[in-house]
Amino acid sequence: MSHPQLDNLVRIGKLKAEPPSDVECQGPLRSGLRRLDDAEREELSLESRFDLAYNAAHALALAALRFRGYRSESRYLVFQCLQHTIDLPNEQWRVLDQAHRKRNLAEYEGHMDMDEQLVAALVRVAQEVAKRVNALAIS
Image 1 (cartoon, rainbow, N blue to C red):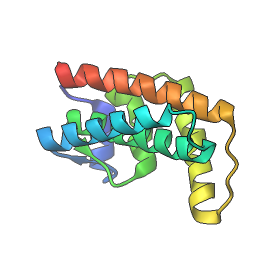
Image 2 (cartoon, rainbow, N blue to C red):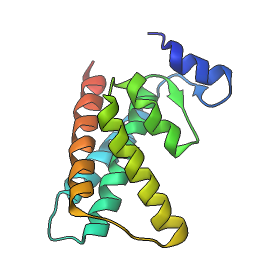
Image 3 (cartoon, helix red, strand yellow):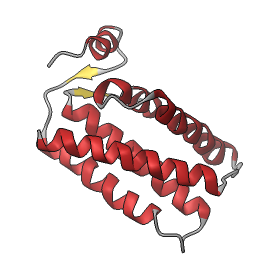
């Protein structure tokens, strides 16, 4: 199935079109699901849960892109493509956008500003991404 918006990103060099590989689809899917399970463990620190949920969402988004036959080197673009790979609603994508900005502040500037509400929203969105990517995996 062709994806015009994703194909446009290929034309401008932001994505690469590559046939899906079972290993490259299933690996990130499994990794994302494991990290998501761990992110739900409330005995972990808020920062650890954020990190696990964020990386789970990224691995799952990467799996969605690979299932559709594309590859990206850009962490942010992988999230942006979720609208086209799994039809993720904009309001859910905005949670990933906010988490990405918080992750960059923590990673590159050492500024940790996490709150329970963001982590809970991030886990919920990652769960939805997981559900939609699982549907791709079985189709």
